[in-house]
Length: 367
Ligand code: AOF
Ligand code: ZN
Image (tube, rainbow, N blue to C red; front, side, top):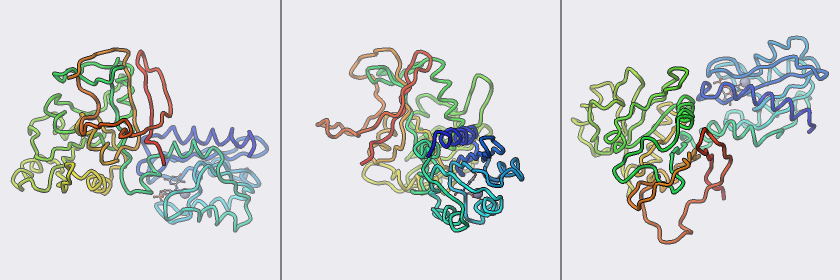
């Protein structure tokens, strides 16, 4: 691996990242073709169903692809899907070397694309900027390995860990810039999930509102085991965005019908000792095409995800304020641990200042 390999792979990663939020359920993929230090082709996957990144790059490169190097952020595919296998295209193009950031976690590919190229006598190098590539496609990798949506827990708190006063007042913890940042995340995910408590207390609309105008709205998912939500709640305005209500499978059909009659999707789920079975709910939501979810509270819903091991990523905003008060609300309710070693360990991945606030990105600690 050389510095040049990293430079061109970085470009391929940047190209891929520019389509963030648009390719679901497919991965983000970028490709760059280089000959004699000249970039002769670039491409990225823009949307599921559209050509793969390599196709765009080879179209641009044409004859210049002969004896060139292809940089691609994900192993070229080997299957006939919505498009023919890119590995065949690579072989026919005449490139002599292929640099791949990571193997495809999709079980229908999983190394077969790389093998096809090697069998054709092309030099293939795997693992250049692999960590960045894995981060970029964290949602896709999770989907492929677990058949569940990738769950991002987001909350905004004061430095002393409070999300609202004891009355539930929370407008606002963070400033304008941090709140706009959340709307950018909403635009990139398939689903946004809250509990019935939030629907009753705040009557939010859970749509994407950006200063430059309206963005893409995620599907709203409401966890409401007894179907206590008021039928006229803002989240049930299905002209703005679709809504899925998740309830217990013990709720009466009559009650369910009152919501389905309004055009809402109701998903009855079995209960476990902690409430609704989150894993079963996630499996059903994935079948409904939801590949990632922004979990926006409140404390009880956050706790059920935490305690059932269902959080894959944290986006934490910390406001430069001290609220105090032992009755002020905190991001996670649930069990009261007695010992510090009962804490869920996480790893900080990045810190950024967003306006006056701090944004921390973290992941559950592995191993
Ligand atoms: C993409 N874009 O640039 C690459 C992908 O449904 P299909 O036929 O588009 O195939 C999707 C699979 O192809 C995807 O899950 C991944 O395994 C592989 N590579 N997919 O959408 C791309 N290179
Ligand atoms: Zn492909």
